[in-house]
Image (tube, rainbow, N blue to C red):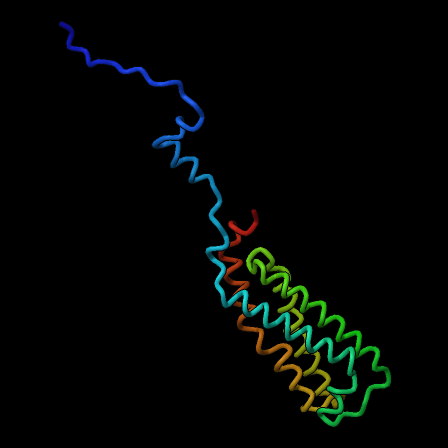
Length: 169
């Protein structure tokens, strides 16, 4: 009598049957994690709100260019068309924010460009205020157009930075 352990024959191996045990865990470790798990609802809602706000503000600047100036009692600028052009740019940002809301981490460059504008705008306003070219009352635009978005846009960019390996797919 032989003391050898009986041997079993394995069935014909298919690609699916070879992915067992260690092979499965190795295959799974090569998969990229899903980015959507890191996206929080507040990110999408922030970008949707920014998009709608910018579309409305841009629309008002285009369709009623006198409104912002009359609201704060300012003299109208000589060329309202420049104000309308600014409204067009703001409206285009609104479209960008709405697109970025579909995947805030993947579309982080739109948020970054928006944040840069929201930082540079108040710097320009401060210079115009300092030199007496704009009244302080015009600063309400800076609060609603720029300052309120600094924290949420920065937070989206921080999460995107932390998840950057996953977003680059």
